[in-house]
Length: 236
Image: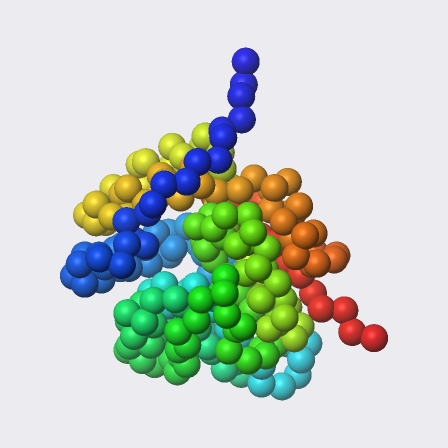
């Protein structure tokens, strides 16, 4: 008889304040490869592109818990190819991650403004046309998810896009196999499976979005074993 996977959280090695800088850099690079392979930017791009086109002007986008900054960089490439004028911002609780993200973006010819911010405790750094967030919520307990979603919605003038893992057995299998094919980082190998076990199921995330006041938000499946929460600010 099929039984659902219980949600279990363990301390992820990437989150340790004592992580070696070299190991942290290698893990960020490994995660960027995983994001590229799994299409993390692709999941966000259609709604972001459509919002920017409708605006008919330059727009601002903030990526929350950006990590290595690879997702805003990949989104920026797509925007450039479509001749869309987008100003890119990113925030993360880790100053080291923000330094890495801004430097990475600069190497790619992308101007990325970095902010050191804890999305579960702080107000986000301003108001933006769109706020994006990928693979962050599974790090949080339910009250933290609600606070983070509220903070992101407050900062999103038009659109909020939140992508995360789904807690499934198929996702756990992928998390055990794929990271070992793309990176030698033992941190990524451990954290990938831990992330799936800590992820929310769609019905759980939908309930948390309701608690955060995201009326009218939608949730859809995204390949592979991901989900995308979309919320649009309603204007009078």
